[in-house]
Length: 164
Image 1 (cartoon, rainbow, N blue to C red):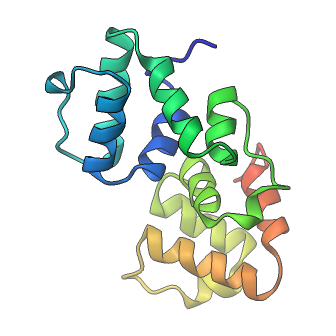
Image 2 (image 1 turned 30 degrees about the horizontal axis):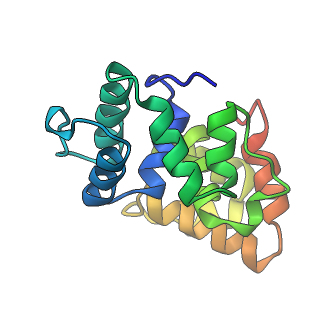
C-alpha cells in the first residue's frame, strides 16, 4: 500500500505511539532514514511530520509503517490510520489512547470540546472551570463516562459524522 506524508491520521497516531523525540529518532534510524536531514525539535506532531516527509523523499515511508506495525501489530488506531478508516467503536473502549486520538481528530480545540460537553455531558460541562484546558476536560469526560459505563455512547458520539 502507498502511504503519504500528508496523512494527518498516520502522523497523529505515530506521534502518540512514539511521543518522545528519542523514540521517534530510533524509529527513523531503524527504518533506514538519513536522520541528519530531520529536525527533531518541536512537538511530537512536528517531529513526525518531518520524519514522514523525509521518509517520503527517501522512499522509506513504507519502512516507517512496517516498523510501527511490528511494534504495535494490534493497535486499532494505527491499523485504522494505515487503512484510512475510522476507528471502530467496538475496539475503542479498551484503549484510552484511542479515545484521546478520537477526541483530537473530532474536537480539535477547547471551544469545540466545551461545546461538546455542553451538548452531551451537561454535568461535566457545569463542573468545568475556566482554567480547565483540553487535556483536563478530555480526562473529565472519560472519567465521567467510565463511572457511568457510558464509553460506548461516548464512542458513538465521537464517531458521529455530525458531532456538533
